Image 1 (cartoon, rainbow, N blue to C red):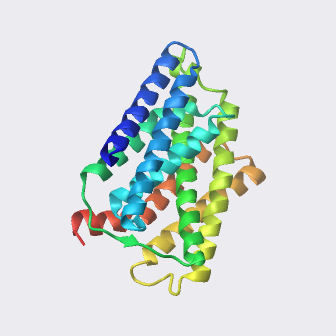
Image 2: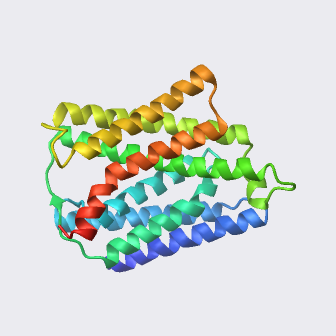
Length: 264
């Protein structure tokens, strides 16, 4: 099958799933069809990335290709979590983002930055970094949803979208579960970076290192604050979003400037 056709199927499945999730919320019902379409989007997206990997004998770590890979992993993690957790509503944001990143990768040729071979140390570092960012991406979206839910519950009556969500306490619990797993992988990413990268504070890496460390401090401080002082609500939301913005700048800031603005 043509690689473009595979990408189109994935994009269509992602967007159809998001539309069905919205319709199900408006009708106060749960339908498995939206989850199945999400899985179709993820699987075909994965096939697309796999074919590109085979054709290039490695991953292309250009801006849009990296964004597409991370978006696919985020969609995959959401699909897995939705099997036993009430998080499918996040698909309203995640699936269209995944579709958009895939479309941009398909239609925006990039200078090939293929790295065909990694030793196991660098492979562990890169894999942990991508998983950490993906999990904390979901946590950030959960925090935004939690903020909206917190604000809407003060309205009488709240909107159908808010009524369809799990209780506020459950939503907060899910947020901290995602943060805990995300911080675990971020810790592995930083640890392997310090162990296996020769100069983590070299000029082209220093901003990534500092911003990632700051994000780790913020996320870890939030978990400690919750355990010791019982932090929750707006405090948890704000800390999560600040930490994720720092991580976003660490992962994509320089790549955006160098590739899309300076064309290097």
